[in-house]
Every structure is written in structure tokens, then in C-alpha cells.
Image (cartoon, rainbow, N blue to C red):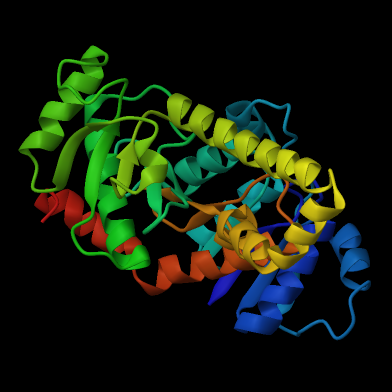
Length: 331
């Protein structure tokens, strides 16, 4: 397995990316290609002892900054690290790519250089949210904000494939994120999407609400990228605030501190359960390749786990199954 890492993308790049690459190379044995400024990356690699030989560097002369336009930057910066990653994947030099950089740039680079899978109109980013039971897959969370009813249907098809082969649950339930469960609720394009999914062979249960993302009622929730990204960012914020408030309350007295000490194993288990670093990253579904998009603040552990996620995507031939689902209408 050969995986390219956009070493210049992320809040803590290239330090965390390089460290994550070293961890992944040691644990999984995959060939890891760090894409970025060669001098800078070599200097970062030298900070680690006994770096595995399966870690290499591919030079990229620039990178896309977070404040830059995705489409313009990818077209103008031919040597940007995220673009080079996509090119290496297109040429078959690597099997997958991972980036914690500019999400829009990753979507544009993969779409332009690798193209979409035959029959897919728009790519979608899927995120697994923790629940009391099986995780819930939410898509799209940022790849496409101008969504049509057909895109919802195709998100459902792709999500169904990903859930069956990665989460390992046959016939997952699918819902459309809406302001109410009634068919009459929502915008016109959501109502049209509801009709499309209702006629499909998928296990469509109708409209669902925001609370259903976390209560385990539905396995896959589809929405447009604008709404999905808002849901993602709000959820991250709530989790962070609750964690800080809990710490604050537990420090109020010796008794609560002692209780916190006794409950530490439970707190650690919960932290691991909701930690984005454990998930690694989110797949960009629908492109003719494998791209895992990570949180901008990803640490080395998150990058290492993103490498694992990308390898699973390739191993279980997700794209081939998506193609079959598109051709057969979800059978």
C-alpha cells in the first residue's frame, strides 16, 4: 500500500504530518510519501530516530493557504502539495492520499486531476459521528453546497456502500436531514430528493432531525454540504465546551476531585470515543481515487489513523462497489 501525505496542509504542518507518517510507517508498514518542501521535510524527518525506510519525500514547490480560493489556487499553483498528491494518485504512483489542508482545494484537485467515478455528479465528504450504538454517517459535510435532488440520492448510494463495507452493517438505514419528519417539510429540492429515495431499493426511512444524528435512530444522514458543515462545526464546539465545563465543575471541591479520580477510566474511555483523532479523517466519496480529508488541527495520531482509513478504503474496493451501486440503482 502506497499513501501520499500532504505534508504542507494543516495547522501544525509539517511537524504533525511527519510525525504521523513515521508512526503509520512503523505500525502499518505502508510506503508513506510525504509531499511538500523537500528541505523543510528532510529537516523535520531528522528530528525522529530510526525513521523507517518506507518513508520518502516528494518535492512540492508550494501549498494552498487556508485563506486562498480553492479553484484559483489549484489552477495557478501547479506545484502545490495537494495537487501533487492528486497527480501521484492519478498516475498510479500511490494508492491513496491524505490531507489536513484546505478542504476545498483537496476537492478541486481530486475532481480535476482524478475525475469523478462514472455516473457520479458531485463528490461528498462523509463523517462518522459517535452514538450510543453504531456510529452515524453524515454526508455531505462540505464538498458541495449547491446540491440537487439527484446528489442526495447519490450520497445515499455512496454512503450505503461505505457503511456496509467499512462499518460492516448490512442494509443500513438512511434519512434526509430536515426540520421535521413529515414529507411536506423542507425545501422543494429536499422534497424531490425524498421522492427519489422513497422509490429506491435503499433502506430509506424518510426525513430525520438533528437529534437523530446522535441518538442512533438512523445509520446514514444525507444533507447538502452547507448544512452538513454547520452541523459538524457546531458539534465540535459543543463537545469542546462540555469537556471544559466538566473539568471546571470537577475542580470545585476536594470531593468532586476525588470523584473525578475514581471515574478517570470512564472519562478516558469517553474521550477516546468522541476524539476525532481516533477516526483519523473523512473520505471524499465519488472521486476516481482515494482521498481522506482530516481536521485542520489534526495531531500525529489523527494522521496515523487517517492512513489506516485510507488503506481500508482501498482494501475493501469502495470505489468499485460505488460504481456497481450507481449502475444497479443500489442493489
